[in-house]
Image (cartoon, rainbow, N blue to C red; front, side, top):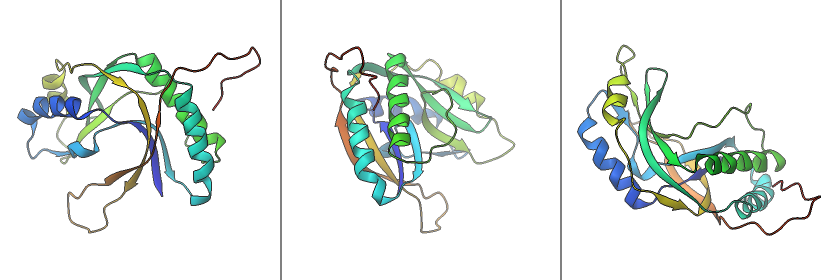
Length: 196
């Protein structure tokens, strides 16, 4: 199954962003579905069933070692000239640490992960349909957006079900296959590495 670890924004944050995006919606971008909006922490790709028990155990440990933290949707950015995303503000150090821990948990569970890169928090909103168009005008219009803060309290493992119908524009369907609460880590001894 195709999996990734994620932070899912609450419905109120999704609604705020949807309202900000509504005036931008046109036929030039293939917009992602609001139900699928998320911050990917660690993309794992295809994961065999035999690895799931260890992956769940290690993700639970990663969550248990991470305190809840504040986050909000903020501004916009792009990858290349085609992909539009909303950014994040708040405790980005905690978000990056959770991403590092999710990545490490997957690796230690035996999931072959891609080469590690510095984590860039983003929530993908859409991709341009036309190669000759430019996403920067959308970024400029969404740049002032500031969402209300919320507390990140859960690390979620999500399954991505890719489209199979062949219908143009069909999007992946996402389903939660595991969720672990973040919690204040217990006091550790000097020899505890804190690894997932």
